[in-house]
Image (cartoon, rainbow, N blue to C red; front, top):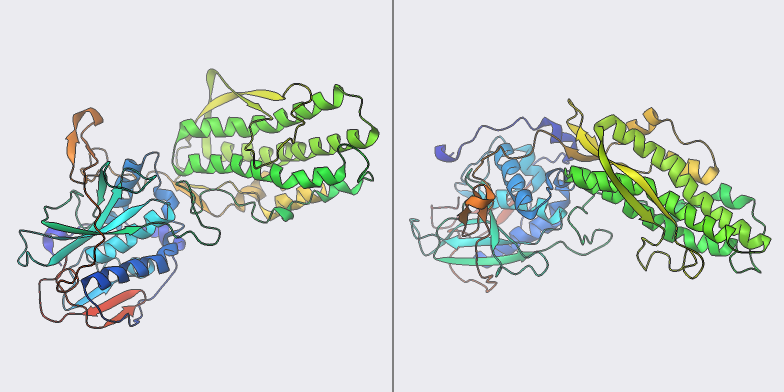
Length: 483
């Protein structure tokens, strides 16, 4: 172990249940050039990155720079460094966690950090470099991540942040030649994250058919023959549910990013919106001479929103009460209106050409995590709560509901870098006094050309066996190794 890179580790036991238990068993990954070897790192990341899907949301911060700094500090503080010797190892995140006290080198650090970034939907590159001060200046001897400040395009022209958890400083080393491999969230299945925080931050109402509002519809006999009937209401239910999903997702994202200002807005909006929708429907009901069928259908739609307000929002209030101190923010208020929807959710749900919009205004509170609270779970709509909505029964008691919330949204007091930590993001950085000494993004040009030089980071890949996620790459000639 390199003494100058040794670090005392945090206990980390609070994360054990969030990371799959994996023993390190070997698998052959084949042979190839240095470019092939980095490609194998990328393939290993994409195969195993979900092992960090429950940890990643805990490290998400309000800004990209803060998130990169927090990921760096978490990895630096929980994994020991050890230079690979005669065998080169690529460890999956779970294997790395299982053997974290034994140490790992820059390649496995990059795999762990890249896995976290992928779960957060953050674009980045694996960068390998030639170092002029190395004993082997013509070989690639170090690897780390760089995170483009421009997350929309993933280009490096606007600067980037360095993520190198082998060192406390997190500064990009001097290099003569970089090679970059682009990494982006694989857009497959239900995990194509478009915004940070996805990767499990929000609730999942998932199968919208779970909400059948059976009790609401059971008494309806008017299924046609009017401008708005029970069939129309049923067709609108998926859009209504999608809207509520977005509303409660915003609450969870605010908690996960520890953004108390956003939490204030998200909770206030969640509390106001069902009332706004009910008011709009009431305006429609009172202002027109509808037939009995249409009147009944409007009332049923109001009941859908009433259920979300009286059942889901009541438990949201209990959730906030359990984990947060709330203080009324003076005269601050939030107004929600029934038309605060996306076009794809339920066009003309509220008869946009009829009557005034429905709006509702509520007080805004400032929130702080209660003393002694270290873990805050996600707010979720549980199966018991869905059943109460569908069956027209009472929602689960608040204590029972809160005990059912098992997925972590954020931990407090354990993951953030200490104030003044020089591990804030760098790139080819400059110190910005106006930002309190924080490093501003550096610059760099992505280069994805294949490289035919000798070895991976100064090694030649001959054969490989994977240890539970750890790839053993036998050395051939050089003994310099990578950091």
